[in-house]
Length: 461
Image 1 (spheres, helix red, strand yellow):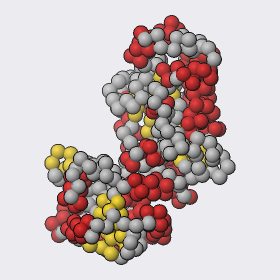
Image 2: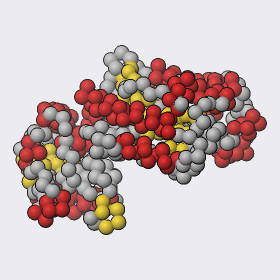
Image 3: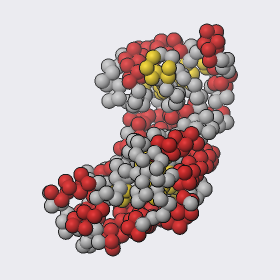
Image 4: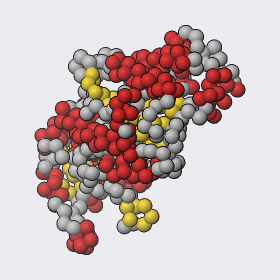
């Protein structure tokens, strides 16, 4: 964990923003796979980690803003649990390390919340993403489970987002630790992949690298030669020469900060001319997206800058036609890139997404588009120093989407459907890096991972 002063300062700032009431932040518990004692690997709630740093199951925290008091609720292991799972530092000692003196048994949590309710004290909580916690809220606060997320505190959501979206130097160091693993994950996959192997054989090695520090990947690893599927979690294909592999993966640092990197490389180790044309178009778009990042610019503008490079490149290849600016304004390029340029990243790989993209990615001055493709841009608001953003343009050839648009004569003034027929089995290309917004510009985080055609082919050799 960070020093106690880090967590104390974060909580102090939170109290200053929220101003009044009681803030209730439950941590996560264990989640069983198929029976009580066989559990998924534990992952603490990210907001709980941000303010309290305690990576232990079955904890909850209360910040009484009105009385300027902070409490942790939880239990030490009983002797029977110690027999099976070992001795664990007493919660009172762990709590002191993050600046908390008030520790109470978990059973007292409901009593404290009920008392606050009876006194009509405003209770703030965040949207909940685990069903067991939603149900427990009904017992703790008397809120029907259908209203737990509807009644979440907008003031608290905005306060948490305003803090978590801006990364400090010590947070950036954690992200770059995760990126050290990403470098190894990607270069290892490039080196190992070859015709005749199953995707799962390399996927398993990559996942193992993510676990080297006792953690796990920051999200389910995408590794497939069916790159036309944006989030493909199947790894059953046998690799074949002539196909491109997409590896979209990330690791977590010891303090659970994420990395998120995508690389595309050929099974054979050498790009064909056709693959190279598409790949270099996507690479040019990624470089343009990165170059566009600076404080004061909206990420929607960066997204559109990258999309214009995609459209221009596809026009040069003969797959698109007409005026590039008009094509992008109409959304014609979204046949090939039906997603946004990127998202916030931090303790969550899609940072604070569980609190609502309309808060982390948009605000009162920047509203989400309803246009196909642009609607999937997770981050569209103004960039500020300390924001950590992914930049991940792509180009995909999705047969079903092509057929759908062609049947509807969609954007025929911008798309050369006849030439597209020879690309139906191409797959896809995506390239992604993690970037921090600086005071005047930006910085790509982590050790450079091969992404030029020359460097990728060298890494595959």
